[in-house]
Image 1 (tube, one colour):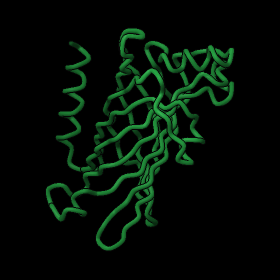
Image 2 (cartoon, one colour):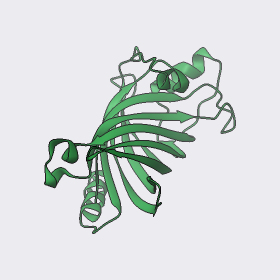
Image 3 (spheres, helix red, strand yellow):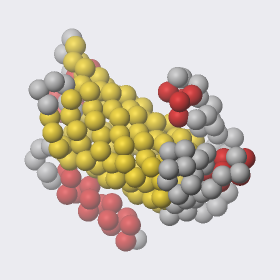
Image 4 (cartoon, helix red, strand yellow):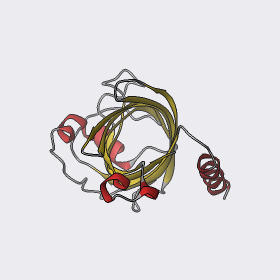
Length: 199
């Protein structure tokens, strides 16, 4: 109950802000392939069919004259383990850089993030990968995120939806080849759809 109240209060604070904030809701499923393979369009849903849902909120740190923006972000996600083990939460803190591509009154954003992740349990996909590779697990890992989205308000010419972005996020946890807690191969990747509002 306390976690639900925390989420509601966080959303209320963000939505009452005047400028320079973002709020994203996302959800998706685990992928069998590694980070590089997914970036090259080689995707394959994980055989466990487990998923993740969550939110993150951000604060604009810097908007450059060039089409770049940097946000500080914090997220709260729920790993949906489909009976392999109890579902559990993950928190993450990260810095995200956006490149805004504007053309024909439209906007497409490319995003890349780097930060840290703490999962309250070890996701089943990470357990399986670590076992297959005789590797270690850790609750605390590096966090990466890659995203691509577009402004649906500009696309649909609906003023109230301007700065509302719909798109794809690749969510990644790893030990950076053993640099963090001796985790070399026991990470995870999730393909997610998201909707994000900046205000």
